[in-house]
Length: 534
Image (cartoon, rainbow, N blue to C red):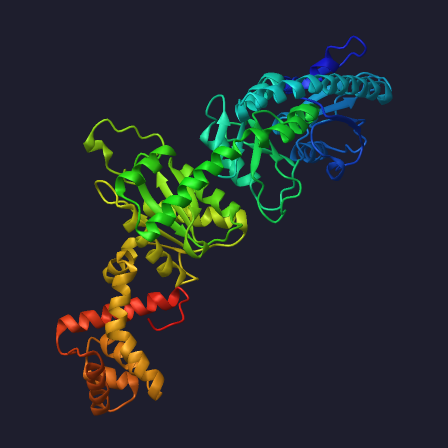
């Protein structure tokens, strides 16, 4: 019920003393108290009735009213007897905290509470009957494929307020796009970890408007992760509470069904095929373009790779949400070693000419930092992220994927750092190796590192380490010998043995480059968990 119903009732002579604009405030329950601080016993949305026995002066009025406002109580009724005046400072305190103040007649509080509770019970009975009708309507809508939008339309009509569904990946289902401030603040508040299904919260926007959200999802889901979807109502919490049978129960039943898990699964299949075939080198550019176009990706702007697992649904949602915060869409799937791979694109791009078909420029540092923060928000821990931006012109996706994977290795090497790296942070020779096929890697290693490692294995030596130190010290005899703590002549002998084993000449720059690439290929091979020298 609304406070206005009590004021306009002919049963009581109730007058408004402050904040008349709150008359349409929804009342969830009625509570009688004369405690100086009743806040421990409040849940929000109550109509408070008091005799003001707690009042000793203006400061008591301010303290009492602030306690109500801090617990989302915006309606207070004070009883006056005989010629008694409104307690000093109470009107000013209510105006200051935006709390409706009612002056009640000299009647027992029981009469008022019975009237309020009777109205609330009748309202709930009507709501329960209405929910049966809506249950059937929603079932029909979903059976005919209208999906989540049908749930939003029905809730908006029934509650008379704008409402929208907000998924953990940042996707919004709404009749009209919600304010960006509302979406951002609700996401960061509502998607905190360990919020149980059915939990109701409220966000106060900068312009003073209240937005209420309801946690929707699977009650059996892991509670240490953030919830997966919120139903958001652009109204106060008491309004939602008063229609809980509809605004909470029905939505919890039908919204998850309408969110289109089948469509998401289809997108996942396409993304997994892309990634797998990129890795095998068996996907022509025109076929990749057709697959991406099937999911709305006209031009990929960047590729993101993050560490994850096959149960990393929360991480996938976090990456998708971070992309949406930058006006982009991320198609996320699993790559090798259970890495998460995201193809980032502008779903709204509609290029009309070849000149417009280049991948749009994006804020790479901002996007990468947003991905790291979003994963930390929903999972509680940060994870390294590698990102590669598309160059001007048509992006070569296999190369972007390889660059992002190399950037991930750089990001993971410094756990105390910024937790992300881009392809610009990766040495050029590593990018060359990253896009080379496995046959090229195997040839390099078999000619240059495998013979040396086989010799080390048979003779208990460590020539491969000597070679690495020599190259890392810019082929300086003196510095390499000092690093290895050996005599220069010993170093010369070891390098001569390496030349003999490989039939290469370490005095030639071309052979030095080949050795350096072969060693880098060996390190990459080893980092993937391969156990054999080749």
